[in-house]
Length: 236
Image 1 (cartoon, rainbow, N blue to C red):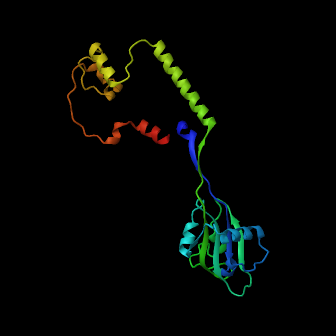
Image 2: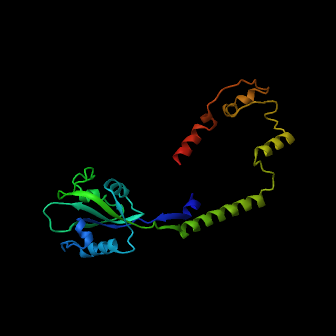
Image 3: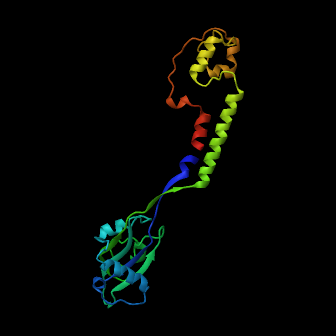
């Protein structure tokens, strides 16, 4: 687990500006300087630029594109709408940060924009959404890798000490056990074929030195592991 955590990927989420504007704004119409001029002018310059990456989205597609909590492939948003009795071409200018509230809660009275109504009585016509490339990185944690290297070093040293100090043959695999018991039969369980672990734990084997009669029993697959092991594995 530590080894897998040493190298990981990250994906950047974008902060973005939200403008609600009249169609005339895109043609250079005047707007009220009450709002942050830097936000408005920056977005306008990007929209009218020859290299603009703004994409027109219809109302349904616009709301769906900005539904995710973290926007990774989109940034600034211009909501083009209509309103009544207003000479201003900018109705709202604000910013939204990654993990913040969805833009619908800032511009629609019902927080969902299901009927595409705006706070000030207008309607959403369409949106202009800035498309950006996703920025992902492959990160490396030096501290976690040091822990991994240290643990592996301790493990390697321990294995080396065991091999160097323990000269007696080890029963590592099932084949090792079978080979050992065939060469050196166990005098305590001699003749007690089919004896089970449960018989040994209950002590029943002490008074039974004869082969056990085989009785086929159907078991569920989950019985292959003990209850204790199931609990430990699920808790971990």
